[in-house]
Length: 285
Image (cartoon, rainbow, N blue to C red; front, side, top):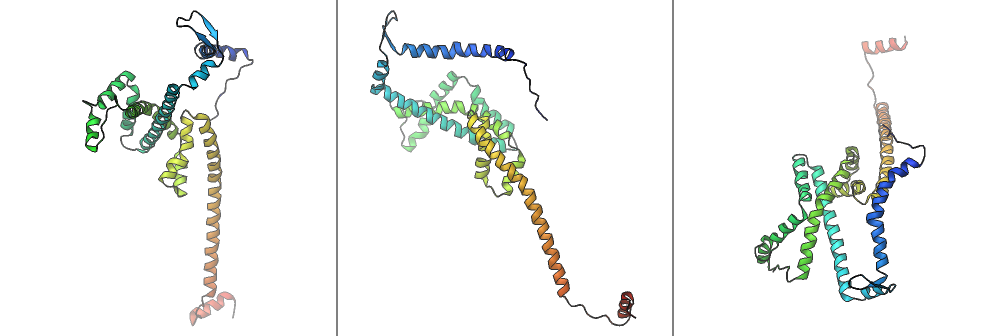
């Protein structure tokens, strides 16, 4: 079934449809960014009544500040760790939920629930779990020799923030990965299983390009998935032809072997009435 595309006779109607979105983007994203960039080139007093142009002096001063460089490093660690943890856990859960046969709806609902929790409630929840005095997890870590106190240990505080942030984003990423997984046709997975793909190959090579189509890395996913789909379509078109050729060749070889076996097997001479009937049938008097 072909998709119906709406075509406009000119450019006026499409531009009018784009005007509201462009106005919102300019008012809330482009204009504040330009004003921030302009303000970074000036030095103002505490009340903002006077300003002095300093060029890139503010950038030079802040990039030479050890405190800012330390905070920048912590921010990069937080961003990379949160993204990697949230994406990997969400992909694993989506793969398991997609393969589940019984109770799959319950699994999916339970995984999506954390996304509906307000950030303030999630913060209080994690505060109770990791509280050094009344928390459950610090008590479980104490027998292992781990003294948990994120109020005094900066690394533990960073780890707590990473875990809490990733936990809040897992459900969001799970929805996109699950949507991408459900677009994979069963015939593709069956063909991969016939070709000898294992569980790791089936979950990785077959599914990742299509999962990326459903995630926020759409452009990369479409590029990888398109090449992967083209290669597999060509493979599946060729597989029936190869199998037909193999079946025909096998039938010819079996028939030839049977004929050779029949010619090589000596037949006993007919005697008596049977021999006379054979002679009459062949026209020999």
